[in-house]
Length: 419
Image: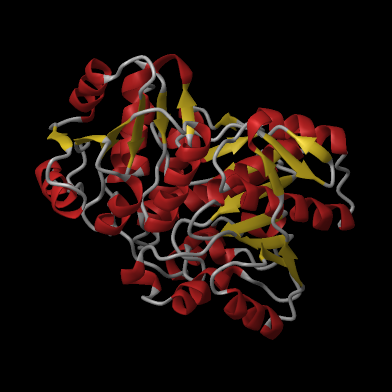
C-alpha cells in the first residue's frame, strides 16, 4: 500500500505540471546553488540520445554495481511509480525518502521564488539523494535533448555518451538531424571524453562540438550477433545479454567502450563481473517478454524505434501471428510509426491510457485502415485494461501480443498485468 506521505508528495509534484516542459538551466542552477551544488561532488556519466539511453544506462549501472561500486542511476520517465527514476545499486529510493526530498526541494523553491518544472525538481532530488548517500559513481540520463536539459548542470563528467540519434521532439529540438545532434551534443564538456556510435546520425556535428571543447572522441564498432543462441560476440568472448532486441547491439558497444575509458580512470572492472552483470540486467518496457502470457512490452514511440521493433520481432518470433495493443501520445508522429510496425495480416487493438494527452483510439484506427489496408482486423477499445483483455480473448497458443506506442502506455499495461 502506498505511503500517505508519498501520495501527497506525488500530488504536489504533479501540480508543478506533469507535461510542462520549459527547457533551460537557470532555475535548476539556482536551486542547486541553494543546496551547495551537490552535483559537483559526484562522479557522473552523462547519457543523451534519441533511442537507447535507458538500456545503456541500465547496463552500465549493473556492471559498476557488480564491480563493487555504489552506483546511482537517474532515468525517466517512470513506468509505474516515480521512485523508479532514482536508484542506488538497482534499489529504488523509498517512498518515505522520496516524499521527504520532494517536500524539501519544493519548499526551498517556493521560499526562494523559483518556479521549477516537475523534471527539474526530480533532478535536484536525484543529485541530493546520490550525494547524501555517498554514491561512488552516478549514471544520469537526460530527459529531453541535452544542451538545455536539467541534468546538464554537471560541469566535469567522467564521460558523455550519445546513443542513437533520430527524429523525435522536433518541435523543441529542431527539424533536421543536425539540429537534433547539436542539442544532444550539448552535454559534451571541456576535456571530458565523449562516446558515440561510428555510424550515428549527426556524428559530424558531435565531432565538431567535441573539437571545440577539446574533448576526446571515442567511436564504437558494430558487433556480430548469433541469433540461435542469443549470443553476442565481443572482445570478452560470448556474452548472453539478458536485454533482447537487435538495437541492444549498438547500446552494448557503447557500454563496452565506456568500460575501457573507466579503466583508464582507475576503475577496477573485471571481465567476470561484466559478463555476469550483462546476463542479469533488466530494463522494463524495452522488448520485454512476459513469457507466461506471450506478451511483448515495448515503448517504441518514434519511427526508428518502431522499425527496430518490427525487425526484432521478425528475428525472435518470425512465424507467430501479431496482435498489437497500440496507443500513442497525440503529439507524436504516429503515422510514420505505424507504417513500420504493422502489416495487413496483423490484428490491431487501438486504445488509450488514462492520460488526457493520448490520441483517440478511433482516430488511430482510421489512420491505420487508410494507411495499410481497409480490410484489416482492427478495433478500438477505450482503456488499456479492455484492450489487453480483448487481446487475451483473441490470442491463440502461438500468437504474440505486442503493447507499443508509448512508455506511458507500456507502464499502464505493466501495472495491469502485474495486478
